[in-house]
Image (cartoon, rainbow, N blue to C red):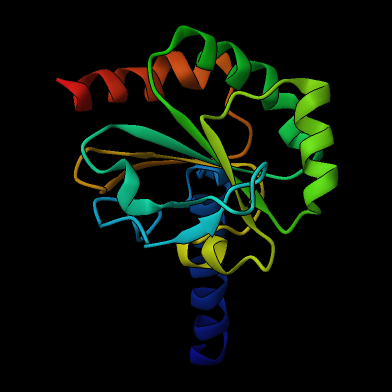
Length: 174
């Protein structure tokens, strides 16, 4: 009898964990960086490599960091949403061009529009690694003190802006 109980117990435990796993939303992967200081960076700007941008340059303002690449198909889906958001002037959006070719990235922005205050080049992906990027696009909302308050995995949509991102930005600005 005992010989059958152990495999049955293991099977039941596996079924329970599988059931729990199937109810989770893969886009809501918790980030260990939420409510922690944004990783420090100092990178060349995409359009002018003689200029740089540092994470400390944005202290004192609420801002978004959008990780994108010209080779990213999903980035093309979110891009019109970011372009429209940038026109509203609600929050500055900075681009982190991830593991991309500079010329191709600039051409991509000329073709699809440039929603970024500045886009910086992360050619080797080291800054992306520090931010916990495991796929593009990813977007971070960072507060006035340089603390990451939200991480959005996948394309930003009109719905995600209305339901989560814009209310959070409004709260952080007040």
